[in-house]
Length: 161
Image (cartoon, rainbow, N blue to C red; front, side, top):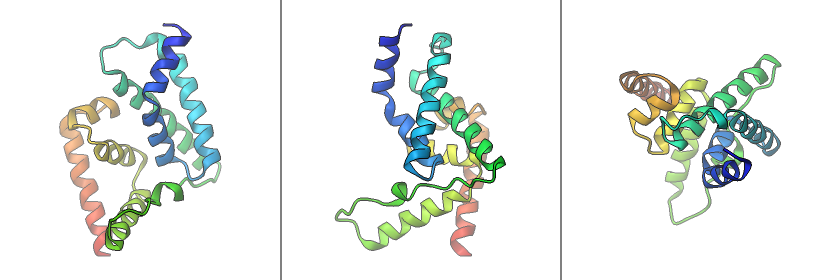
C-alpha cells in the first residue's frame, strides 16, 4: 500500500484517533504528540494490515495500544494523565444543567478506571458491539461482558460514595 492510500485511510478515520487522544491526554500538546505517535505506528504497521478485520477495528487496536503504552511510559516518569478539560466541556445546548452535571461526573469517574477499562468504556460509548470491542481489545466477548459489568459496578459504587 502506498502513501496516498494511507493518507486516504487516515483522513477517513481520523475521528478514531482524535477520540483516543482525547481520552488519554490531558492537554492539547500531549494530544498532538500522541496523535503523531499513533500515525507513525499506523504507518509502520499499514503494510502488514491483512484485512482480516475491519480497517476501523485495526486502527482502534493500534491507537489504543499506542495510547496505553504512552500512558504507562508517562506514569513511570511521574506524570499523571487525566481526561482533558476540553473533553469534559460539553457545548451548551438545550440540555439541562442536571444532564451536564451527570456527564461531567461520568468523565471524572472514567478517570479512575484502568487503561483497559477506559478503552472498553470509550468503545462502548462509541456504540461498538461486544464482539467488536473484544476484537479491538484482544479479549473474548464473554470477557468484555464481565469487564463491562465490573466497570458498571465500580461506577455505581463511586456514585453512592
